[in-house]
Amino acid sequence: MKEFDYEKLVTATDGFSPSRLIGKGSHGYVYKGLLHEEDKRHSVVAIKTPSLSPSPSSLLFEKSEQMKKLENEINVLSSLPCSPHVLSFLGHAEKRLMVVELMPNGSLHQLLHVSTTLPPPTWLKRIEIALQIARAVHFLHGQGIVHRDIKSDNILFDWDWEPKLADFGLAAHLADEKRPPPAGTIGYLDPCYTCPENMSTKVDVYSYGVVLLEIVSGRKAIDVTRSPTSIVDWAVPLINEGKVGEICGGGSAVFVGTNLRLLRMAARCVSSDVETRPSAGEITAEIVLCLAGPLRSLPLWMSFFRGVVKLKRRRTRLRETLTWPGQTCHVR
Ligand SMILES: Nc1ncnc2c1ncn2[C@@H]1O[C@H](COP(=O)(O)OP(=O)(O)OP(=O)(O)O)[C@@H](O)[C@H]1O
Image 1 (tube, rainbow, N blue to C red):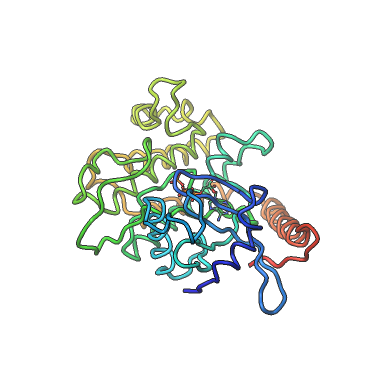
Image 2: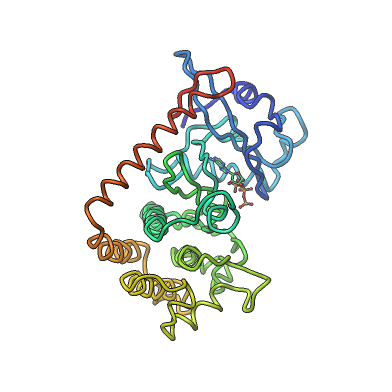
């Protein structure tokens, strides 16, 4: 695990300057940092601090909840092998600051529910996101880890708009003898997860099911302006009646069939019968099958077009890395 000098990270964020603040969570602040490497190159990274002042000389050395959460995130992320579907961990300073790859394109929540500038993601992009996140969850479970906070806010996009699972503050090892008390986010939290002993991979499968419903329907996990407010209470009866159109609004026949398949799987993920929920591996395999049908019917010119778009994005990314004010930057 790479250890950074605390002061080096303070300099990288311009003394935690508000102009470098990218986002605030309930436990942490995330800053954009510019690291000066020994070989004179520069890297743009994200630096996470507990939401209280990160000064090492203050009384805040006493471990607050925020600090414990960040320390847990550092321990979990640093124990994981690299995965293209999980936020890359780059190092830490005194376990009080965490350095990770910068995700410049916001979260899935912003893309689906907030952004007014970006066009809504295409059907294909939505399913690709669902697949990448299923792979991330499958990978984590394979490592004996439960994320416990899967939600659209914790799915972030990299420079190429590839989604990655982030925010491991609540993650826990299944093998640990002492299990943490239940935790998560309302709307995504498995209602069957009521005591520490109930912690299992199926807790993540429930939350993943909620995200899948969000991706396919475009509706928020909890929407107080609608009744029922919960996406699960709204979607599951409609899925049981096969009313795909009411959930995701029509579309061509091939997409309706595939959406019904995806929605049925989402309904299994959020089932109150925990045993019948699919594993993350089953979910991944099912989405691959769902993707295969419509992709086969895509004309050849469309695949070529998608290749060109990806290439263009890479070029934009390169341009952006070279335009840090007054600096030439290299992005990890
Ligand atoms: N690597 C990153 N690159 C860019 N933005 C990030 C990165 N990590 C987190 N963010 C943004 O920073 C904000 C806070 O991050 P995060 O969700 O990890 O904090 P948190 O306090 O653990 O969250 P929560 O409120 O879910 O407990 C979010 O808006 C998130 O989108």
